[in-house]
Length: 98
Length: 98
Image (cartoon, rainbow over all chains, first blue to last red; front, side):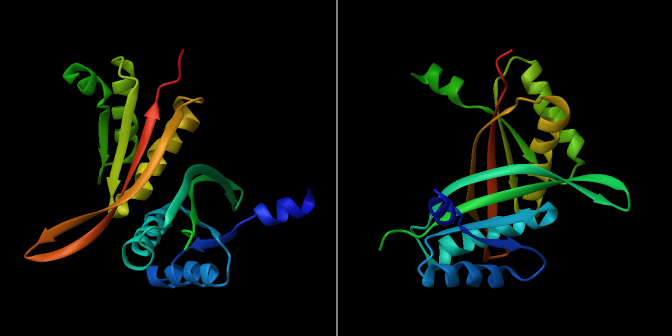
């Protein structure tokens, strides 16, 4: 059971302030290591970039990339005693079966 | 058949440069008019705001809002003879059954 859970936990790429291509390469690296499920995540204004990462992957690198699921959520951050809400996105990718 | 198609076509809110709350109100207005499916769409950097709109709706207005589907895509724009690609998102919302 514990092993199954460990296997079900996919690799994650957290999209932030770096250029889109950096994250594209991070996903490709996971796929090339034989990891077939990669989750692309972002918060706040980086959400648009996470979508760019997936679309660039699909357009330029892996034509039949499988976008398995997209989910959105809210995280509550506490900074200097003030709570603020930030939107998040998680895009689950699967390497197509060669 | 034509009638069915017209009915299946949901109302759409295109998220752009206005404040998040404007789009939240647009969705709520559709729901209050008896339209049960609303699609929230955005392009490029407005994608993050589209997610904010849905999350604010869910957090503050309609707790059991049904996020039916989220899809991403690429649109090719041609401006001054140059082609450029822009990512898009479409978030399908359904009013919960009261």
